[in-house]
Length: 356
Image (cartoon, rainbow, N blue to C red; front, side):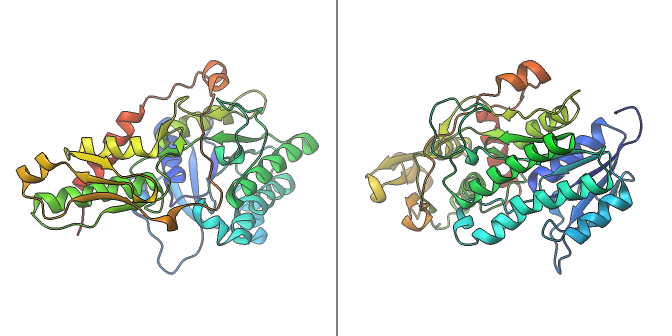
């Protein structure tokens, strides 16, 4: 399917994964890309700057919560591929807006599948899943056969989408796949996500120290949660490989290693050249500037990180560790960016692009 100029719809175009997917496709295929976005009074195109004027890219309007718009897009464009990264993607706020989360993440996938089934059944459809579907982990590492036991409305919505994809694949013989994506970050990650909150917070503190100004600490919740982190740029390559197999099959994409949020914090401050030490325990635990570093740099503030109970989730997933061995062996997918490289890239980007 790669020899002709394919037509590809990508949703979630203003976010991290959708925009990275478009960049990958423009570099590695000759496809015409249609980036789907909702109508908005003030859209943020910052993640699209690298391709917004590309001659093989076009913005189109559509909404995962509106079947009419999806039907129109699929019937008019007649895509060869439909890659869905659109979602209410923040786990934390899914408890506050559970119905909206389910409408976009689960029912939205059903609307996409229906549009494909009715108007372009030869189109290959991709649904982005999440390791949050596993939730209450039964064994580690988690593979594609791990029980689905979500612990958040977000995880439940993604699990529902996974089952819908399977039903449509088996009922209508569609090329429809749903891969489990473990945590994946990068310089385009939204600021509400903990990794970007850390990297931008470190950048803010770095510039405060550099300019001899006081600073507020980074406030976080559970520092001991373990996550399997990768770079989004590696994952979009894996997604494209999943989309181009002879037969549709679901896969796990992961780094196959796990790190605590505390490790991410430690590495981030090291990358910025800031020396911190931990003290206290429980909700009183803090990271402060080391005495030697504070004296050397005449620092006005001392606390770098503190715990804020409001950031604890109602139900926490303590450990996520993926097993992407099948994807590596069967697809030839090999992620290139390590955990250390990921943190370094994010911190350096946020320091270099810091704005007061």
